[in-house]
Image (cartoon, rainbow, N blue to C red; front, side):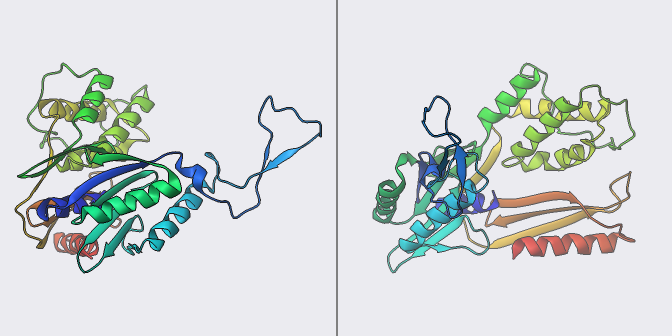
Length: 325
């Protein structure tokens, strides 16, 4: 997701074309390297007993399917002159004297951007010849993210996903709140009464985690709530419902990548010394910007117990430097 946000920020500031593709039956295009047999499909009659099929192509459900598809499309892109990024293996770039094009791959979803529309059309035609793709045109909806573009920049949010989450939780008509959590409340493992339905709490936190893709303002509290999945209490559930009430007040909230932007990389880090009341571990927080475009952020409990706030700050800074690199 960080790579995707970087791609969108650069596309907005450089006014690049932004197109989306979808590969039909992606896994079925990959050849198998191993020798794999399968039982005959039902209702397929044969005169020979114990007959099986030798697979030449990959099928959905095989353990090798994802790997073989990725290898197949990687080879196809490298033939077209694209280089695979070492920082993110799903990112491919191609640079010539007149054009620069990037391709971001997520299973069968492809995001193409660049400053030369003829190169983009060339890639589309080549991939369609080999794999049969759907050309979805300019990007509007990618991996659950709603992407809207204007002359001022690109807006990315998860409005539809947020409204579905509120509807499924029964809080679509709830009274909104102005903050995602109460700053005076400290969440602990032993605070409150155990929940009878643990699975519903786990499903809610799982969906909130994906919502943090475009909403950094709920990252801290969702990180806190995700630490109690093994034994949640009614206090944890109440805190999760408060997050939903906060989302109800602004379901369209998201990220904005302006078209008039610099490419200066800026990072900020902080730590909360002994912020966890159960383990006394500190909490790391950081965020990274390209110009004024927020591209990466994290809130995470540190792995060791620090003896001072200074030590906790240094560990947070080290994590931030790793993300910058």
